Amino acid sequence: MFYSHWNGFINMSCQDFGKGMLVDGSEQIAQKKLFYKNSFPIFLIDSTSIAFFNFNEGRIEFLDPDGKLKKTVVLSIHDLKSNNMADTLDPSWWGWKWDWQIIQDQKNLNIYTTFHQGNRTRIQKIDLKTGCLTKFFELQYPFPKNIQIYNGEVFFLSREPGLEDRWKLISYAF
Image 1: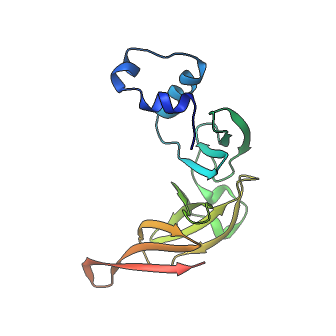
Image 2: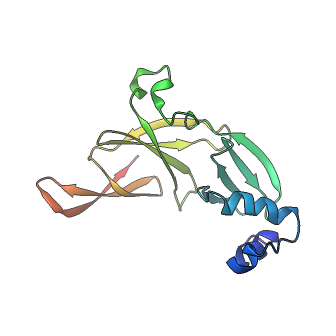
């Protein structure tokens, strides 16, 4: 469990927040990161740290249970300006776009992200030590929805061919 300024800040009502009732610098940092453009995924990595994906600054910030910064790692998921993997020198990535989706495997706590090109989707593990991507896994079904990962197995919904109103649960071990 994480105990700190964060718990008090998260429990603060929106009305108090709107009135500027911030106590110290920790709450101001939380305001900037959690309430301004709230698109920063936060994941429990182990019992002593959380990973805060700060896309605006292009890094992963690791925090201790008190909300203090332990370390940062440069995030190499995407080109922060273009969001287009075509800028890479590897032709197998030309035309792929990052989905801005971060997924955590709830069993082994690994972190993944997704890319798409047309109706195709790739899933890649993020190395939390380097911020780089590892080898990708391409899903064999078009336009997957609600992608989840558990114990190294990916689960998602896919429409059955010819039956647009029927969805099928698909799973792959990768």
